[in-house]
Amino acid sequence: MKRSLLFAAAFTACMAGIAGCTGAYGPQSAATATTSQTEYFADNGLGNAVAVVQHPAGEYKDGITYVSYQGPLEDPYVASYNHNTGEWSGPFKAGVSAMGKDPTRKIDNHGKPTLIIDDAGYVHIFFGGHGGTPELGKNPLGNHHYGENKHVVSKRPYDISEWEELDTIPPFGTYNQVVKMDNGDIYLFYRHGAHRSDWVYHKSTDNGRTFSEPVSFLKHKRRTDLQAVDSWYPYVTKGEGDEIIVSFDYHLCWDGAGAPDARGHTANRQDLFYMVFDTGDGSWRNVEGEQLPMPLTREVAEEKTLVARSGDLWSFNASVTLDDLGHPHIGITMGEDLGVTKVGGPKQMRHYRWSGSEWVGGKSTRLPVGNGDLVVDGREDVRFLLASQRSGGEAMIAWWESEDGGASFARTRELLVRDKASFAISSFIRNAHPDARVIVAERARGTDARRMYLLGDDGPVTRTISPR
Image (cartoon, rainbow, N blue to C red; front, side):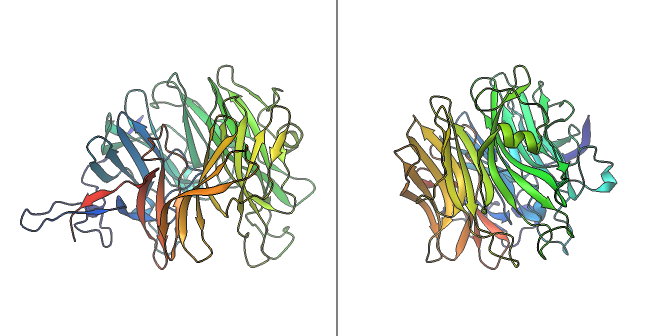
């Protein structure tokens, strides 16, 4: 059922009261308007405005790239770029998050938008949740924390200027990930609450206008040997044909009093796993084709789906893709926990792949401390597009390439470099154009505002703006 809330075109970035944005993309008089080029397409990103896990954050369709990101007050913003004309549209405010309105709270960052275009051309955004609150009702599949998971859709096909909110999904989700199959079916995956919650999916067969009830596929469960709960962080994407592939790591969710040191709950994530979802018959299997019971528990995951142990290192799951043989390649960061005052140290990107008979890789290579996405061309050519820091403090987005199946990597092309900053990067845009592969937020020191970039093989897609 549709809610009555409508979001009009008037909610552009400048009209939303963004600090420093007045006149950036708004109308200018003929007497005063002169134009210039900028490498960023918006300057109203907020906090960790994009991330690999909330994906896809953008989609390329019929000559236009559509992008989304977290903007002022943690609300979702959407813009589009026409590759034929070089023109930008937006950014437009697409919805209102339940988070980001309390000035006494830190930026939550868990409700970043996820974007998909249905077969009828309507643009869908999922955003705003970090587990929901008790006021929203009992969470049958986990616990509560903050925010409210929401779903908005454009009022017209391929038009991002006006939006309406749909009442289609529970309010408890976070880390939205969306997969659209070749037949148009849409699968929405997310964690159904805060840390101590199942991961679930919903299916839509009517272009996202209705969704099935949630189906659990990763089980949260209290441990009996430790004062902790099993939790998970997956990355879900389309595989071959009717299949969806999933890489995931394990989160040891300590009780405050039961943790082994004074920090209590930490970001302790461990190990790496992989499985496949056959949407044709609803079954799940491991890489060797063995059927898996659902929802998956830690014990079964360790026995049937383990890729690698992280040992004393902490992990942070990245992304997964397939080579031309249908064998999975996985990116994951691993690094040491640096002690009682921090929740985890720098983590280096690592690469694993299925050889056809065993998992190989994972060794410390020349890949940097950073995060990003990967693509495999053929069998041996593996490429990561990563955000990282140089030793001198510069932030860098660069390609790191391997010609030997991931045994070694070398940095080949730098696409974006900024001094005294860092970058947040999205996963690859769905059906990405080579000129527009990822969305990047520049995190300059001393401010929560972010410049937003659309980055491709030739660097940033520029925007023509008027002076302020």
